Image 1: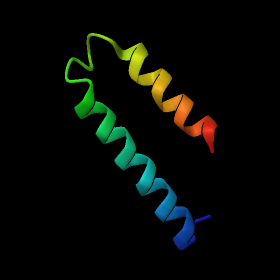
Image 2: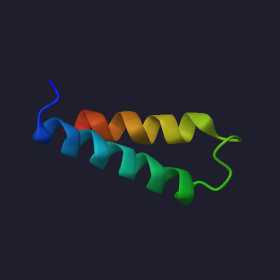
Image 3: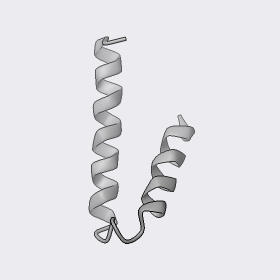
Image 4: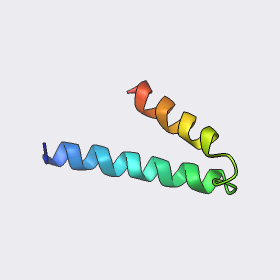
Length: 45
């Protein structure tokens, strides 16, 4: 489970989540918007 590909994939997802948090500066005000984006991104792959 802890293969290099898995680590690369998880770090990539964490980077995407970080970018989403930066994009939605009022992240705490609209958590559902960020959550939908994250679910949509994971569901895309």
